[in-house]
Image (cartoon, rainbow, N blue to C red; front, top):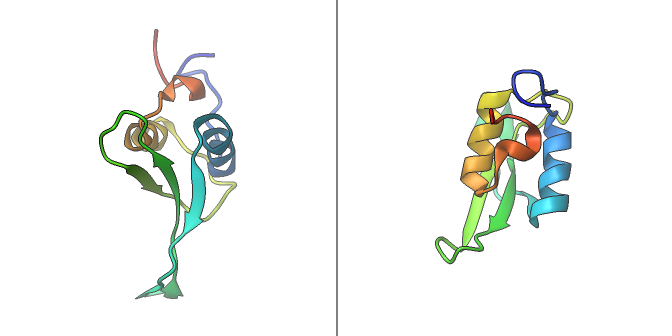
Length: 93
């Protein structure tokens, strides 16, 4: 179903789809950053660029797998990873 009627994916659903269908890898930073919540590390998706441009594409992710991603974040993540947001229903044909 096309946007605006498509069900928005959760962070977990987005990760699962990108890992399964686009050869991405879920990773976590090895270094921690100290901030207001104390020391934290970040998780991110990493994908090799198949078009010969930059060797790796990455996108930082929220920690909550149950959080729902709206059209804006999905489009942004897809653009950064060089995949079509059409798979997630956020394209008007």
